[in-house]
Image 1 (cartoon, helix red, strand yellow):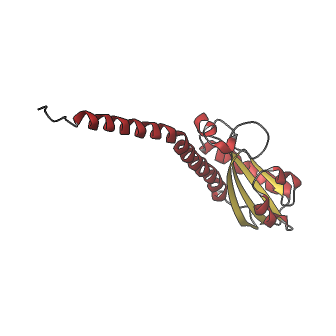
Image 2 (image 1 turned 90 degrees about the vertical axis):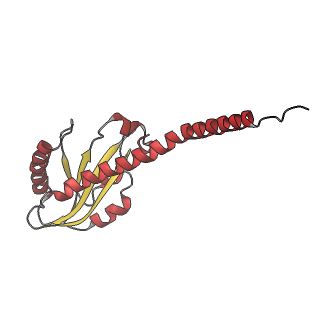
Image 3 (image 1 turned 60 degrees about the vertical axis):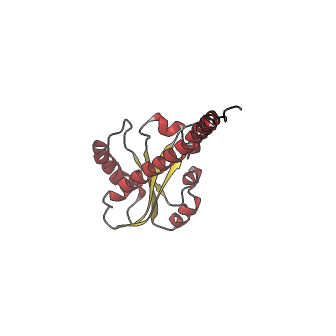
Length: 171
C-alpha cells in the first residue's frame, strides 16, 4: 500500500497563484486610484484659490454675488492644469477703479502666498465675451451679465508637476 498523498503542495500553489492575482490587480488599479487622488487634490487647490479671493475685502459699495472655482485645462492648447477662482461682484465703481483696487489686493496677497508665479487678479465686465473662452463657466456667467456686475478672476498654480501630469483634465 502506498502512503496517502499530501495536499500541502497543492495549497501552496493555490496560495501563490492568488497572491499573484492580487498583486497584478493592485498594480493595475494604481493609475486609476492615483488619478482620482490627484483630481481631488487639484479641485482642492482651485477651491483654495477661490477662498483666497473671497477672503479679500470687497471695495466700498460692492456686494459679492457668487463665487466659483475650477481646475483643468481651461484656456489655451496643450497640456497643463490651470486653477481658477472667480467672483461675481456688483458695484457702482468703474472697471478701472475695480482693476486698481484688485491690483493692490493682488500685491498684498502675493507677498503672503508661496508661489513662483506672481499673483494677478483680473477684473472684467460681466458681459465680456472674453470670459466665455474660459471652459466650464457658461452657466456661472449667466448671473454676471446684468448691469453693474463684474467678474473678478484669480489664477493659481500647481504645487508640483505630478499634479499636472496625473490629472486627465489637464490633457
